[in-house]
Image 1 (spheres, helix red, strand yellow):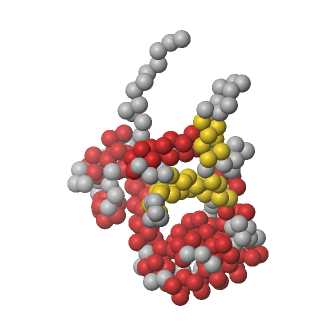
Image 2 (image 1 turned 90 degrees about the vertical axis):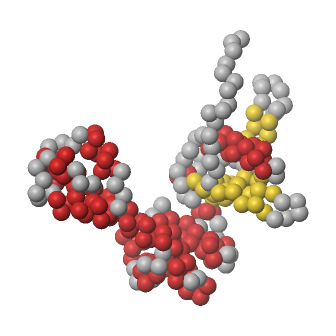
Image 3 (image 1 turned 45 degrees about the horizontal axis):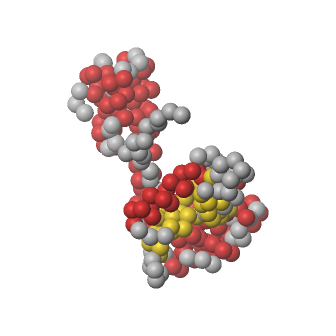
Length: 251
């Protein structure tokens, strides 16, 4: 035998979503959403479940939501056991698995408004998608505020990108959600992030042509600038600056 490190203070974890269900007695619903295969997922689920129970003193039900088939793997059977050879399991951990592509679209189209956007990832074909999008549009237009509608359509577009080509997604959603997008904080944040990334790329591309390869300090400084207007100012100064240091001196 040998002694191993027993210090667990470095363990850090964060579950995807945790909801307190106000039954009598109350309990916790731990939702773990997966879009890609993660072979350490099962041991992580056990860890999250145990830590949540310890922190909140409530029973925890763990549910894994697989958003697409590529996130699935054979060991995802709803139970995790640990045992020594020739002995009964000393640990049995049960969890639930929801595979979206196996569920009918009606589960989401007739459910709460927040899950309507999952319908395109359900058991539908590309030929059925226009009808599904039409039903989504009717519910969202009737039940959501403009800001909520924008957020829902933004999320729907992102989720559809997990399964369908961008050209198909754009053709299906074009003209449906753009009128609400500007009311969506999520959409505006995505737009701003895209603008920031594009301006950083422009600065680095044009700067390399004029000043040579940037130093690590330059790339670190640029990576820390998130305000579009500050990056726009740097782009404007590119014509007059003669070095990277001169270009970034006023930032």
